[in-house]
Length: 103
Image 1: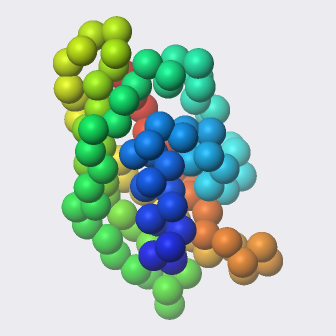
Image 2: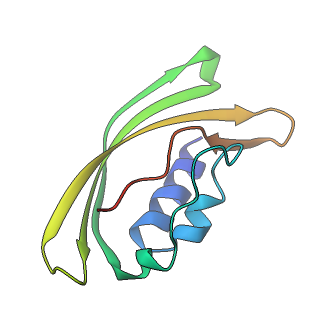
């Protein structure tokens, strides 16, 4: 679990948004506009809260993401409420919640 959450956080932190999108569970959530995300520079990614549930198969995590949209040059922050589950068949952690909305 720790490794998957760290890999996802690193992908967001370094602007590898398509790599972060690969963690999405069923792709029911709308796909982000990856072209628009080219203007986003993440300046911080900090886990604020983490709770393990369902005998270790579900994780709820709250993350603060700080970022700059290069078109506006103003730092903003968002709170990302993440819900993760362990996919037993594929033996991978998957993200059920929506992709962060960088506005």
